[in-house]
Structure formats: structure tokens, C-alpha cells
Image 1 (cartoon, rainbow, N blue to C red):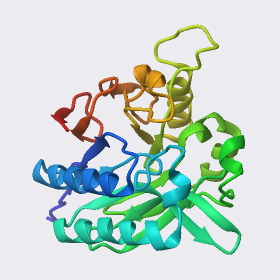
Image 2: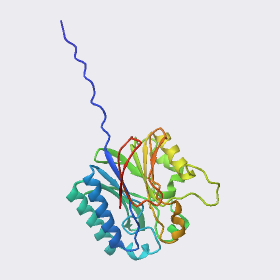
Image 3: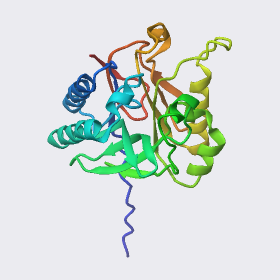
Image 4: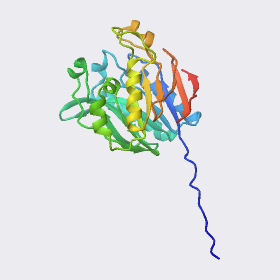
Amino acid sequence: MSLTVHTVPPPRVFPVLAIAQIPMYWEISENVEAMKRALSVAKRVGATHCAFSELAITGFHRRVAEWAKPEVSEPAVAEIRRVAAELHISAVFGAPTYSEAGRLNSHLFVAPDGTLAGTVSKIGLTAPEATFFVPGDSRPVLELSGIRCTAVICREIEDQTEVMHQLASSKVGVIFWPGQMRPDPEKPVQDPPEHVVQAQNLARQLGAFVVQTNWPNALNRPEESENTGHSACIGPTGDLLFRLPKQGFGLAAFTLGEKSFRWYPA
């Protein structure tokens, strides 16, 4: 008599991620130091990936022109890569990058050994951004410490048709959504706001998690800080798993897929 052995696949283990909803500073050195502190906290609390916001290196403000120069921003990026390697943690963060076409608003994916696993550059620039940055030309999907991921940067979340066309057959698992989003003051108040609903639709269509890292403060117009922060985490069925505090300075650690997080004030 032969014996039939049925093997049971191991349960899927979801990683612990961190959202660094940390303050934005005018000075590039202060932003880098804040990122280094957040990486240390993320590692200490067991995260495998730490996500930062759009142009985290320079800050998203009118002084970006001072810092978005290769001789200034690239040493700052190298420092974050060095710290990621020292801590052995993946870092996902915004920084300017440079090509023959010009300066790009990019999101960098750094592996735990400090190598650059990939870069996603913003395609859907706003009119003011287009006076300073050139648009990216693709939205690559890459593997980062076991996660198949990409980025949709800030207002690109509104470009549903284009983003779906770019990612429809990609089997992306996590979409990092960095930016400085707030409800449109010209439209009726709704909860969740329109941009979060758009992110829910994208998550549902692609069957992917959307992890937002929204700046918690606005430097150009401080009065707009009222609705900053409040970063969202959305499941692959479009369900809103949780949102972080409005104007909250800190780091959230969570197991991907769960509806709760641990909050560490900055």
C-alpha cells in the first residue's frame, strides 16, 4: 500500500513596514538627520522597510532649487544609503535625480545592503513642477526585500487610466504613495477625501496595497498644514485599513494587512 503525503503550504508571512510621517525642514541637512533617526526607530521596532515622503531628502518647498543639484543632493542620498546598509533595512524615499534630459522628481528604492534597487520618477507633474523638473517616462515595478513594489507620486493618484495602463499586468503587491496631499478646499468636505477614494479605487483594480506617506506639515503655506499628514494604508480590496494622525510627527510601524499600527512620536 502506498502512502500519500499531502503537503500544506506555509502560511504567508506579511512584513512589518514603517511609515515615516516626519517633519519637513527647510534645510537639507535637517531632513537627512530626521530620516536617519526614523530609520533607526524603524529598525528598532522590527520593520523591514521604511517609507518616506515625496522629495524627503530636500523637502517639498520653494527652497528645493537650492538643494536639487547633484553636488548637494547626491551626497545626502549616499548618506541615507549608508545608514540603510548599516541598519540592514530597506528605505523608500524621495529625492531629485538627474539625466541628460534634466532634473527629475524621483522615488528611490534602497535595499538593505545599501544598493539602489530601482527608481521611479514622477510622470504626472503639476504645472509649477514642470518649470523645474522633467517628467519620467515609465513606472517600473521592482523587488525590494520580498515585496514587488512601485510608486505613484502625489497627485499622480488622479491619473487612474494612465497608471492602470502602466501597471495592469505587473502583479505589483505594494504601491508606495508619497506626497503632500490634502482635500481640495474648493470641493465639498467628504470623508475619506477624494484623493483617498482614488487610491482605494487603484488598490481595488490592481489587487495591491497602497501605502501613503504624506508630509505632515507645509512650509510654503503653513496655514495648509491643517489637513496634512493623515497618511492612509489601503488593502488590496480597497478597504481603508487605517490613517495616521493629522499633522502628526512620528513613525508608524505595522504588519502589512492589519488594521492597526504602533505610533512612535518624532
